[in-house]
Image (cartoon, rainbow, N blue to C red; front, side, top):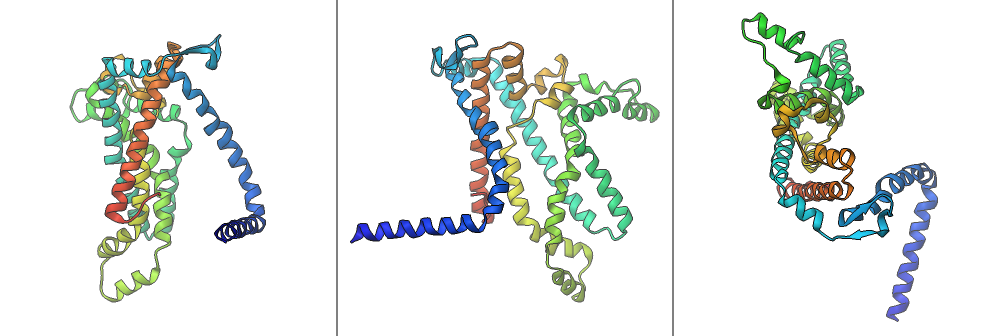
Length: 314
């Protein structure tokens, strides 16, 4: 009797699934290219992770290369580079989160308060433009702005009577330059999410506040910001999870031997070991370690957010 009930329950569940598939078949067909993309370019390459546990030889292939277990992980943890890379990665990620995360929120709230439509649209357009430029162009602009000979910033410094600063070869300036350029390049694009969330706030809340005599500052503080909190928490989880995953492109374009001590991170180290020195197994081990730490950070942030604000990704 119990077995018949379980069988009936399973059959009814499959019937419901089939009805949902039949109802949403057009959307599912549109979703097929996305599924294929993730299978081919996201999940398929995970097979290659096993070279981190082997002495990979290009001519012998992945399966026939010698199995060495955790040898490359131990070598990396015992190397003199480990703690330097760990410190540089965590500091760059932390500073980017600390300074870069609030800027789009503040920008979106302030932009929403602008009543002059033409000015608002102009500012929006200008703030979005850097997001459409490649990392190479962004980095080239940063290098030109900070050039000691023709850079606008150094020209201004000289004009007010101070000595020019060689920013790009000064280790103490690298993290500031990286974080500031990242904020400038991503602030306008990231603000789109918060502007969309603000647009979804019930306008009757603002009307009631005006009737009660609230000023715009109070409406921003007690209506706009609390209404944005669910979106802010979700974006904070995502950004905190990516704090440990710093892209190598901009750092490669901006750093030099003078700034290695503060600029070298896991991703640039993987690039040098894997592509320049062709030590694929060792570089894969470093990459796996970086990915695991990023996953742990994402999970911890998600748990903390659920405990404090009741919002989480899962």
